[in-house]
Length: 236
Image: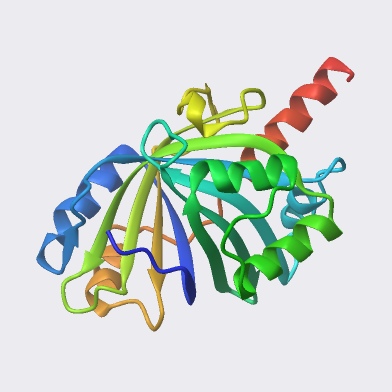
């Protein structure tokens, strides 16, 4: 799989129930193809600071927000697994993502111990500046299962289906696998449409016919909000 490490695109989310999910999959087969990996797992370590400033700011829905995460594909990382340290920014509906690709251990040692990776460059300098300025550290592991599709006439047009979102606050190392507590307040699937240009008319027609409308959902934000509500009930 070829991973783009720098891009700008528009991302739109749709929250699907099981019936809508099955109907969308049936309807897009004429103009989209599922990638070679089929159903696969994505593991992330999200970074934040002591005051949770990144996620708290994001929940306020500002016109600009950013997040930093270490990502691997599969259900357990090894020292040599391909990994990505990412900075993802969103400004006025456009998403900008830049990421550094290195072996997992090299990036994990950097975010936990400050050991700089062997390869630097502009993306690393940008990440390093933000991590040091905001004192970011690993805060949570979030994993989910994904099916990904690309357009038959435009491979840059992507659609992903995420489900079975789970998380943990301990064992913040992807070498410990993808286990975690299931997020209770999640839709059956979070569908995300990712496009450099306009959404293809074929998909617009499918969404219109099935009465599926643009929604809002943040995996990390939903987890953090549920924890805050739970702590409030417990008087913590």
